Length: 231
Ligand code: CA
Image 1: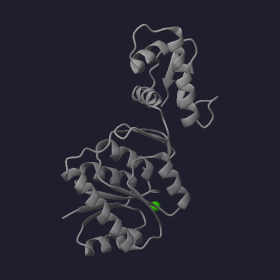
Image 2 (image 1 turned 135 degrees about the vertical axis):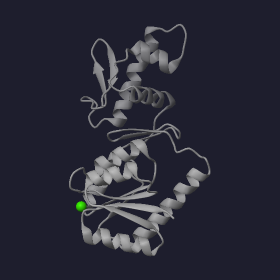
Image 3 (image 1 turned 90 degrees about the horizontal axis):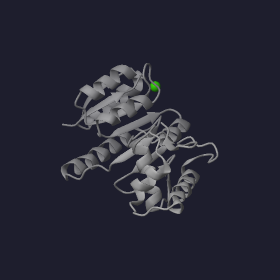
Image 4 (image 1 turned 180 degrees about the horizontal axis):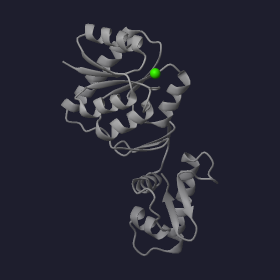
């Protein structure tokens, strides 16, 4: 039997969700604060989490982020505010689905079933989940070699992708242009002209990921030294 964890502070909603899920054959645990919810999510053995955004104690954003570092079970995030749903979608926290309250309990049950089925297929087939790096609004899917900025996919060339991924995988570490060229281009007999390629690529990457390329929030220039991915 699949176990569902509901983290929701509004008792009436939590009970309604619980009733419907139990009627559909699920075992359901309820937590009504963020801190208890996180503990249950990490220590319990639930198969799916229904996570409210606004909670006393730790909020749903933080719970989602922390659970994702440890578990890849489906997470359905719910909120009463449509704007919040848009915001969390943009943050790329790793939730699998989002629902705006009020929703019909049967819709919730349908989505729970769909996500559990998908997850079981994934686990059962032995196919590994894609390797993903998420830093603030940027999501790099290393397996599919795709980049999303605030939920929107951006086209990257092979070298741009490799360079961004390398920097993002080594955050807060300053690399010189020479080091970056050496890592990404793998060429002998490097000239100054080759090194300048790094600058050109950084500029192109910034145009895709930064809100304002002249005030970069992700890839910083360290004058006289090189570049650093800031987290
Ligand atoms: Ca709430």
